[in-house]
Image 1: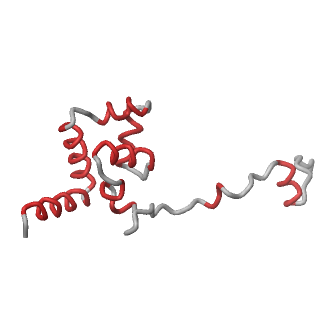
Image 2 (image 1 turned 120 degrees about the horizontal axis):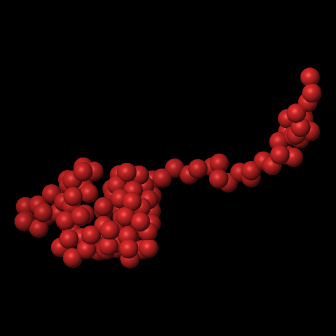
Image 3 (image 1 turned 180 degrees about the horizontal axis):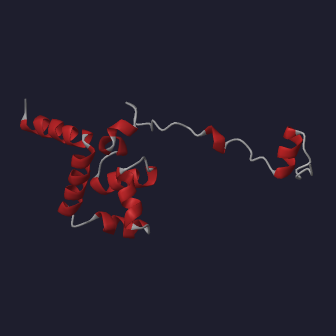
Length: 118
């Protein structure tokens, strides 16, 4: 096995462990003279917003970090993407449904939207 191939496999192993991935990303940025905070400043977001990418899916930050490092987001966060590079994130169908206003709630429940005196 070639040296380059072994290095690539080692990097893939590192990226599977969230703590090692974070350290690897920080190290790669430092080689370019950057920090996570400087990436945040460039994007005009807080440092906390950048660090949030390590706790939960955050497409904007995943893409920004990947762009800074010259790779695809699916390379940095393989568990968050399928084999075609598409996000595995489940869709939240509640956002698509219209919010029920007080009037609609009253119609659905058969009430007039007011408290009834007992």
